[in-house]
Amino acid sequence: MYSLEICIDSVASAVAAEQGGAQRVELCDYLAGGGTTPSAGMISLVRESISIPLHVLIRPRRGDFLYSKEEMEVMKRDIQLCRELGVDGVVLGALTKDGDIDVAGTQELIDCARPLSITFHRAFDLTRNPLEALDQILSLHIDRLLTSGQQETALQGASLIQKLQERAGGDMIIMPGSGINPTNVQAIITQTGVREVHASVRSRVEGGMVFRKDYPPMSSNSPISEYDQLVADVAQIKRMRQLLDEA
Image (tube, rainbow, N blue to C red; front, top):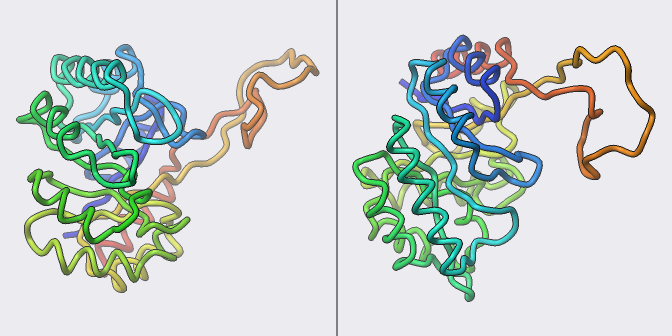
């Protein structure tokens, strides 16, 4: 069976993901900036709202993955909080200034996180040598790697993802993510040989505000109106689940 993980940023999306047949969710905040760690309140309520496994992104800010001592401490405390709130896994990673995996720093985070499931996030896609980076991640005995194959979308990066899948063998799960949807999910698993995929299939939901002030938006890079939300699309998730079951 192929496993489907849905990236979410709200309780509504978490519930939609489970209703659609996802096997797991990754909870983030600030998806427009690539994702950051969600609040304790969000983690807690999502945990109460779904029964499928919940993984949480550990990332203190947008931008690169070279972290200061203080940022490492923030991540360790967030990991501890996740453990206390009953999550099933965390999604983490760190790089050196030269574009390699920060093995020592990542190991510190792993030590805080175990026995939770651990995914190395798309910091991998910014490494200078993906095969060397994969070997470094394998040395850390991480459960899975989320990657777009160092391209804008996983479909564009399918060639590298297939190489990563072969090299990792049964030692780590390779999970493609970025731009995966019902139109390409079968092509991705066929071209790469993976058994898990990560997707963020969301649709615009109009907000309930009646009075809508015409003024400069609070977010300068939002793809939608301040009065709308993007929520996981149950129909698209169900379709992806169906396509994976048929593959």
